Image (cartoon, protein in one colour):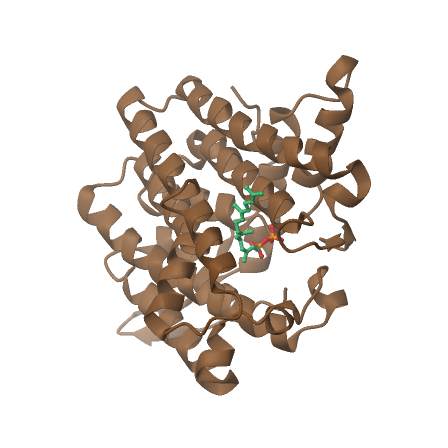
Length: 328
Ligand code: GRG
């Protein structure tokens, strides 16, 4: 079992803000102020403590491989997918700590995809999270294998979550969903569509399908998987499915926009590469203004999908806005 308990009891993340209304003889809150910055920091720290335990400290004959895996896995990033997995678990009233193995598995798969995506045979990038990419430091062969190691070990970590109290039937379904999201019908399949589309104009629907696979599938699996582990009901899972699809697409639209509008220093990775590679993107198809409007509409759709949920889903609501307003 991963030891990830909080170190000390902190002040509540959802504090009553200054906005109070008098209603008869009592006061009611007009809105609660949810501190997203603090939530994201605390959750990222929780995930990073757990990630530090899932790949062993480098030692013995395999030390260099473990070092390369840890270099990428512990080398930064927003940790958005594992945070969403934990937040979805919480939204349905589950115990987030029970989903920590799943959250780690999702982040390990995400990191494998980044390592492979940076390889010379893919995007050929030198910079990731403001540091040299894995293959620039460890060479192509070890970078490829460290991605393979992270992908495969992700399923070992997830399967071991039975010891966190996740029932076997739920675990089995979560493993199958995550494998489908990462594999040929999901992220890898989407990457192939992306490679094939270079220099080819795509329709709006084709572009949405490409990203539903390449980026959306892992977001979807993270959110629905986290909620399933949290004991979510079928109607709750269906609403979160809607939330995840809108959020995943919003994320990608903004990713395309940041590739045009943000600097390499701001992003910690090379920008302007979509246009250089002749890739179809939302800004190239819709223009900048309409792409921002589309992202805002998707944020709204994501929030509306949560209308049946109470305050437990405030983190998910705030993350929908963060995804559109992020600068990295
Ligand atoms: C098998 C050689 C080989 C390659 C496969 C699977 C794959 C390569 C690529 C998947 C495509 C991919 C990298 C999708 C993710 C796209 C994306 C927008 C990543 C950035 O996500 P963030 O901003 O990342 O959440 P961090 O961790 O930096 O916060």
